[in-house]
Amino acid sequence: MKTPWKLTRYLPLAARFLREGRLPELLRALGDKRTPQGQRFAALKDDLQLLRALSLAWFKGEYRQISRQALLMVVAALLYFITPLDAIPDWLVGVGFVDDLAVLAWVMRTWQGELEAFKAWRARQAPEKLALIEHLPAEPLHS
Image (tube, rainbow, N blue to C red):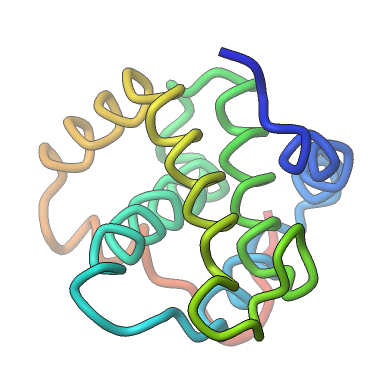
């Protein structure tokens, strides 16, 4: 399946975030972004939480069983999501998150196998260990 053009534009930035170790910066911005409320957006929040957990586990070196291309797409999708002025600006009430949902849905569908493998790995972790892995301190992490 072809990568959405709007997501393709974020791939170089995603590569730079990974190369420069700036993933925690992105994840902090993700935590600061307001997401729409309501049942309609519950799946969006779950998907974002999964992608955030995957990104943190990868950054901390705990989970590296994801392909480079899948990780790049995940990071690009998160960057797309936090950018307020994407294809449809987020401040447009009622429609501003439609393109964000489409991009996230594409990533979730296209990389379903890799994401399911991460979910299985995550389910095998002790709750205490998972809490440490998924904790993002307020100050920058050093890898």
